[in-house]
Structure formats: structure tokens, C-alpha cells
Image 1 (cartoon, rainbow, N blue to C red):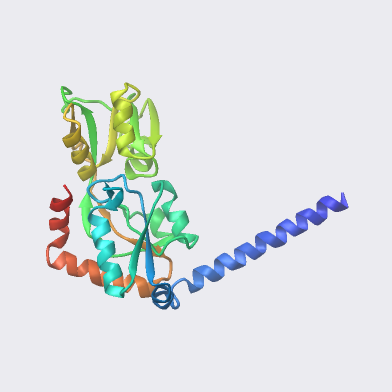
Image 2 (image 1 turned 180 degrees about the vertical axis):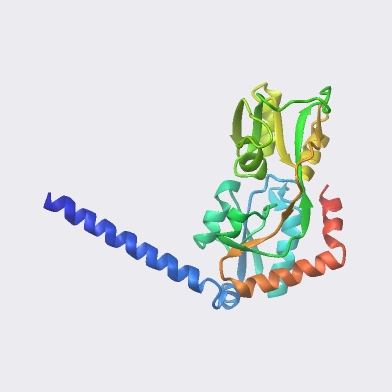
Length: 258
């Protein structure tokens, strides 16, 4: 009994220590952030390169709208850009664990994310599209009872397929990417796929047996995320983004990567 109590006490002490460290990290996340990045000579972007045209793989390297923006951020600071390609639904956790400096992955701004990260200015407006077989009558297509494929952790997953505000799915199948979800639709394992507008249009362009339609869901906006309190880095990111927006470069990049 005494041994168990000692172990429990040690575990409690460790948990308290982790909590204190986490609190300190949160409080000091922005202090000297740019100095640390400059000293390291690199800045690390967290992304999921399965979301064309914002991020995708070209010649075995990440490319896309967000990658070009990230490169401009690195150039503004005067450091090299390092990109960590990972599962989308783990990006925020990795960011807050200090595994990267910022996250750019077609991230939709919402209240849940705003509670745990700080967002840049919004630079793209999007909405959710539904991908279905080409001969589908989209005007009468009913999502109720359908087996729906989504990219795990995306808006299509968390705010549409997984709740019943708009329809009640028969089942929701989650994949690492919308590409995988469409492949599963080809295999007959899902009836349709819900994903953001531009990736949806890109996917049907590459898979002409499908079409993507707008079911009329509310618009959403993308932004870049940093740790809470990292105002030094956020100021630089906002400076670069605002310049891109003012000069119309975001639209140019979308066209370039589409």
C-alpha cells in the first residue's frame, strides 16, 4: 500500500511539474521568439501536404500556396524554411508542444482553435463542397444516411459529417487526406466526400468521373497559427500576409498552384 502511495505521489509531482512547465512555456512563448529563430537559422512550418492547391507534394517536396507564403515569411526574417509534413489532426498539438514555429495548412479559424493558438489575419475565404459521382443529381442529393468520407480533423469532419445540424450521416469514415477519401469512394466504401472548395475542385479535375458541388454551407476563413503569446512572430507573418493580400498575390498563388 505504501509503495502504491509513493508511486502515486511521484506521478502527481511529475504531473504538477509538467503543468508548471507548460504554463511557463505558454507565458513565454513569444519572448525572444525571433531571436531564437534567427539563432537557429531556420523557421519550421507544420503542415499536411495533402490539401492542394494550398499544400501538396511536387518532385518529392512540399509545394503550394501556403508553402510560398511560408517561404516569404522565412525570407522576411532571413532564415531557411524547414517544413514538417504530418497528419492534419495533430498539427495544433505539435505546434503547442514546440515542434514547429507556425502552422499553415489551410487552417480554418474557429473558436475552438482560437482558444489554444493565436491566428494571423485571414487571407483566404472558402466553404465546404461535396464530391459525388458525375451522374448525381446534386439538386436533390440527400446526405442523410450516406457513408461520408472526410479528412480527419478538418471542418468537413468536425462541423458537418460529425454533427447533425445539417444532416445525419449513416457513417463517417476518416482518412489522412481527401485524396485517400476519394480513393475509398472509387472502391465503393464511401458514398461521397466533404472537403474545402479548392481542394474539392482540384480532386475532381484529377478524377473526372466525379463532380464537386456547393451545398450552401456558411463561408469560412483560413489563417496561419502560432503559439499563444507569440506576438513577435505573428507580427512578421501578418506583415507578409497583408502585403500579399494588398498586392493580389494570394489569388495569383491560387491560380499558379491550381
